[in-house]
Image 1 (cartoon, helix red, strand yellow):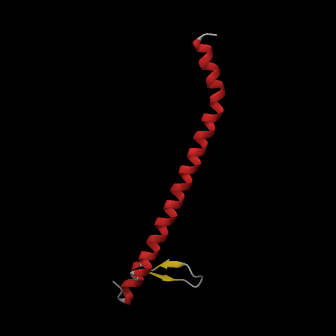
Image 2 (image 1 turned 120 degrees about the horizontal axis):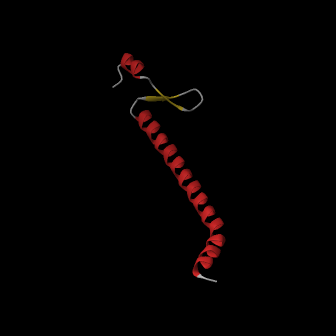
Image 3 (image 1 turned 30 degrees about the vertical axis):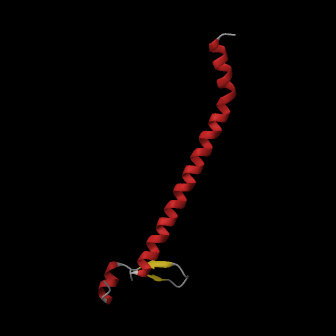
Length: 76
């Protein structure tokens, strides 16, 4: 067996593991980005609520008040 055959055999054994590692890394990275985006959105909504740019809706969710409505009420 020469070195080319040995490399081929090693790659044949390692290829499924490498594919699994790439897929797992992609899934973990995507999930972390989604969680980071959701957290940033929640922080933005809480900031808007704190500064009078949002209100609590009937269903308990934070709703952004449009600029036109805030200007009519005299909010900053």
